[in-house]
Length: 127
Image (cartoon, rainbow, N blue to C red):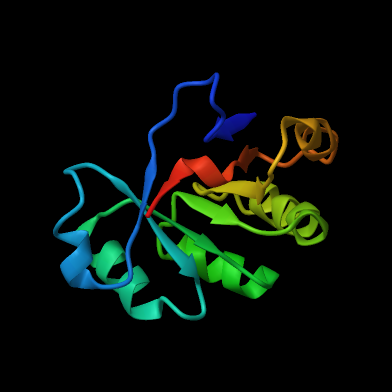
C-alpha cells in the first residue's frame, strides 16, 4: 500500500500548481498536484506532453481512465468510487496508483481492506 503524506513515513511531496508558469517554479523532478481533472485539462495535457509526474482528483471512472491514458502518477478519488476505479485499474493494468484522501491514520485500514492502492494525507501537498 502506498502512503503519501504521513508524518512518520518519508514521502516525496506534491506541489500544487494552477498554471504552466507555476510549474516552472517547482523543484526539478517534482510530482505536481493539479486538483480536479475536469478543471485542469490544459495542465494535464502540458504534463503529458512534457513527461511531468502529476496527480489529479477524479469524479468518475471515465475521468480515471482518461487520467491514466494521460500518464497520471496518482488518481485520487473518494472511498466509494475508489473501489470501482481500482477494479478497472487492475483489469486494464493502469500505471497510475489509485489513491483515497484521508485525514487520519485510522482510515487506512478500511482503504486497505477495499484493496485500493493507497492513501494520501493533506500534508502531502505543498501549496
